Length: 227
Image 1 (cartoon, one colour):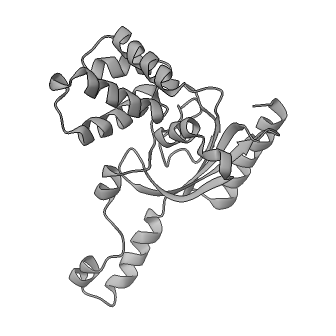
Image 2 (tube, rainbow, N blue to C red):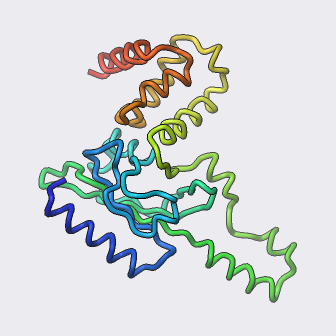
């Protein structure tokens, strides 16, 4: 990202963090660095991340499938913090003059304090049982199961988040995977941008109980198939 643009958005992160308050996390990602993607962050206590944290699983997928090409932003999708809190997230795509992605400005809203206050107000006029039966909030567990985005502090955590979901969906024990099944899993991980992360090949090889050269062979086969 060009220095002058980076500086402008870095200042914007600080401004938005102070203006919106402690329930809003503002994070600026420089996509040129996959392993240390966050270059500025305000109210990082929400996702427990700091400057130098990697790109999220959703961010990698956006880059891999070029979702940013036909839109300027992605708003109001679900995210889940490391301590299982439901967040409302939005991302603005920072592009250059050629419409190529340079960075992402992300806002993650934690509405926990407002929901707690809302529950207390409802308890004044409704029995607790009625509130629970008619709660409009879906469970965090269901969001974690099908979450669009999870927030991680290391490359290993990002890779594990995506890989564990793919392995769970496959419903097959790792030690019983065939070569074709491993190839299919590697293909899905590649589509989600996992292999843009340095060290991902080693992590995936470990999880799939195969060698790193095997993963590279799968990736070569995928690239030939897509070329």
